Length: 288
Image (tube, rainbow, N blue to C red):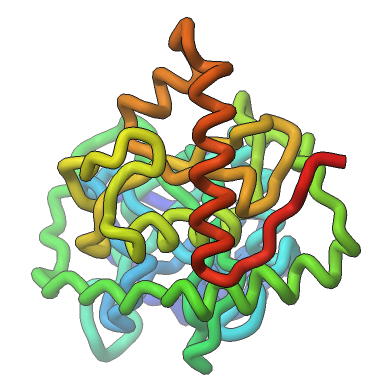
């Protein structure tokens, strides 16, 4: 059980000082993810206005950005520790800054790291990079009675263009020396694919009219960025290359996995995706 009390406002400087006085790790008093004493803690400062840090259901569920302001986010330090908490279920105390100035942080209690989400975003240098985000869910405990700051939601950043994403895809292809097998790494019960490739194929569909690459119909709803919502489907489950992945609507995705005609549709979908790549002047890969 955490040594911190939910609903209590703490002075952050005193939290770190108390750990140091006890002969324990004081932690980094400016970091969002840090070990204080024996506990990994998350300190969320909403006044920074980061879109990646946002509520799903206040005050019980939220998304939080991993460490790293520019360049690819690494599987190290706080990011590694939060991934370990996701794997073994270790709860994480979360503190939320309740005043813009000063050092007043409300303890929201303990949270479980429910999901580790790999994606693509812009760093502070405006350059696209791999990122990591974490979904937290509050462990059942007393309700939060302290009011949280009423702040406007940060605006979503502009989505990367197809050209920007393709430049990253090409750069990564050179590093992997043509390897195209889909990763066997799993996240709980799901296979993990390269989020850059997913981002690219979804942008490809948006640039080609915003319709499903199988049925040609708009999905009918939008994501957090105001774009048509697509799901990435691997035509061959073992191949993780952009011309072997399609952006499809939810109905077609189900059909491609469970329909009696799924094999025939996969053949047609592969031809469609290949044609889209050729029309855009992008590379295609024939079966080995």
